[in-house]
Image (tube, rainbow, N blue to C red):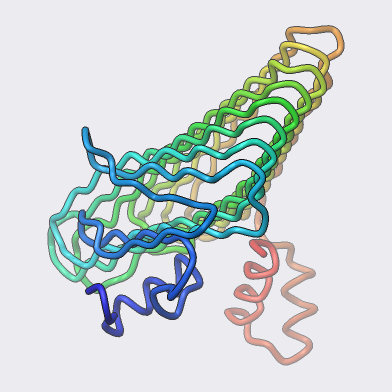
Length: 310
């Protein structure tokens, strides 16, 4: 598949990586059905396959600006289980956008599963924008399972913006994110999750603020429909003068269940930590207002959900 994509591959690639075709330049790595099928480097970014296990090392040179890296995964085979380890080494004062994500199209009766373990090592003063999208499609009865693990190690004055999106169709997902922040490091995490039918989604965030004046903000938005179940668990530990905030908002519909357990632990008198959680249904007045404008109830609900998850 090094030269051309079929229509299914194009659709999955567009959904998880905003790509219409394989990049003609820049750094990228495309993984399909458990194998690396296309790869490219740039002047500032080198991608190297691991020799001891499945995965790649992505190295961004010090001082690099304006670089982007795409590392999507697509799965189109039923009954496949894929485990990959990717390590990112971001040089001092470098700035880079990394787009990952996985799309599973399962038209069979067996479970298809992708587990991606990503470790980020940010040098002093580096800045990373990380976007990760997940989606499940296909008419088969087999499960579409995604279990992403993200480990973040941030040196002094580095910045990491993480945007994770679960677009729907994923049967089961367990997301685990851990982070350790050095002096002046700033971490921002935005999560959006949509579940329906009997799907389950679990999120764990664990952040250690060990460097003075480090900060983290975690914002989670989720919608659970039908009989789906979601759980959000987070812990922010402030070990020095620092700032941390966790916000979790969920909309429940039909017979869905959402559980939220945000926790903060202050271990220093100058640690400023806070959390808030809100779970509820779509407000009736919102539906009435949109219905008076000519929208059906279903269209009104879809518009409200789209705006909430934006």
